Length: 117
Image (cartoon, rainbow, N blue to C red; front, top):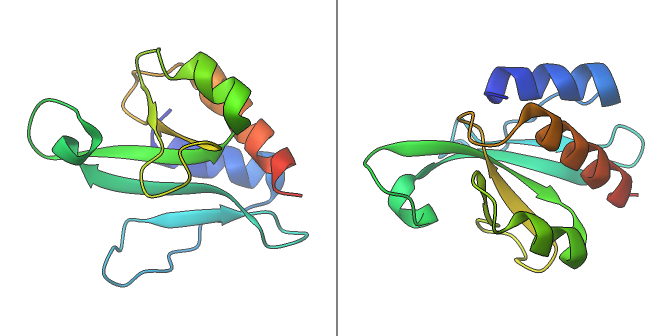
């Protein structure tokens, strides 16, 4: 799943549109639950070295809330990283470059949405 597919999924599944909150970071956006305004995802493009990834340039990621039990089961898998700029005990970063399966990203977005009640 790439950034555009993420936006389309969130709009279709939850009615959530991206909100671009930071002028300094024009590609960063949050997804909020329409009913209570709580964040359930944050998408960013982050320098690869800040994520512990090899290579130059940036990587598109999305942070989702999943809780410590699920967090532990995903962290050892390719495409999943400790949360960037969020609580590392409850949030997970997912690469949006094809390293993580679309089904996993969708399932984790669903979980994050439900945890943002």
